[in-house]
Image (cartoon, rainbow, N blue to C red):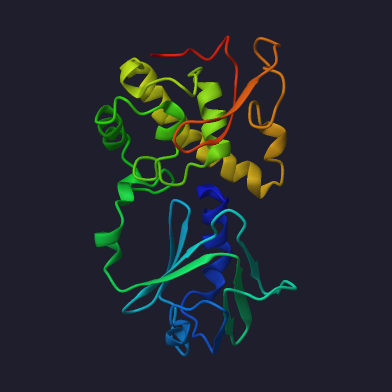
Length: 243
């Protein structure tokens, strides 16, 4: 599943079509995409893992789910969920969820929860965590109402860097460590973005998909943990279990 930084890259790549009129729309989405024909794109935005195509009176929300993808000015050998053609280019989305939003986006999204937004609010994140003391650290980082944009790779890397065991209960983690967790989640997302653009993301992984802890030189533990049941790679020695 593409994480927040990857959606930011998509947003940047799509900027060439801002202010452009859609001359042809197609795809196998059943949400009434014909509505987009001859519409001018006002803006592109992102919220966490969601890509937003903004028009004057509505917005198209794209979620790439687990295996979705996109192409700019090229096509895949597969039926697109949504294809937008312009006078000088095209945007194609595959294997994704498409939804049309008629509401004002400020009523739909809490922008302060988007880890990569200029409106990100670390204090609000801390308050939300404090209100969920029984939540496991591995689930909290994947909660899009708290850390919109954080996915499983970021979860594993952040927990390793701040030395918190994924099965730690939020209410048992010292406030100082919680603040460090929040700070590192924000910081790592931008590192992720930088490395992704350089096509060198994987070489910077310290925990995700790795076998040996670089701090203690022992084999990582592995499991599908928490309510989210996502893959976790962690060290039982240096990552403290707070219960």
